[in-house]
Amino acid sequence: ENLGSVASADDVRTLVTSVRERLGADQAVVALGADVGGKPVVIVATNEAARSNLLLAGDLAKAAAAVLGGGGGGKADLAQGGGTDVSAIASAIDAVAAAVLG
Image 1 (cartoon, one colour):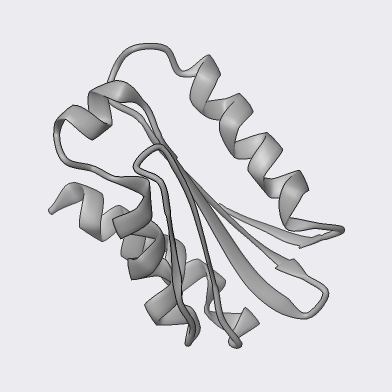
Image 2 (cartoon, helix red, strand yellow):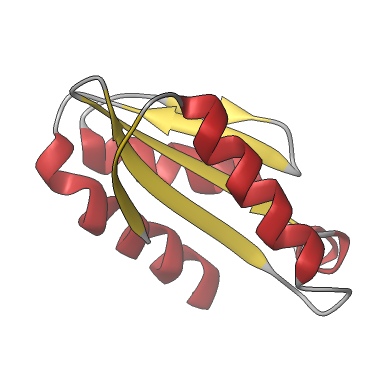
């Protein structure tokens, strides 16, 4: 989901982790994107069930960042990607969904 313009990536990270916690034990991947000061950012969080199926947040953030014209990475449970093309946030989220759905 594209959140539009937000004050900081920390705001997106807080929301992503909160949503992940509320989804419970079933496999869950949460990916949110936003415009932070004119730069696109995508934050991805995965729960234990998703990670056990090799859905790793770092890999998913890299896929999103590639669409945004940048880079990304992080841990298996929480990762961030960014780039230069704010107009590509929706496509970056779609890239995460495509990677999850295989």
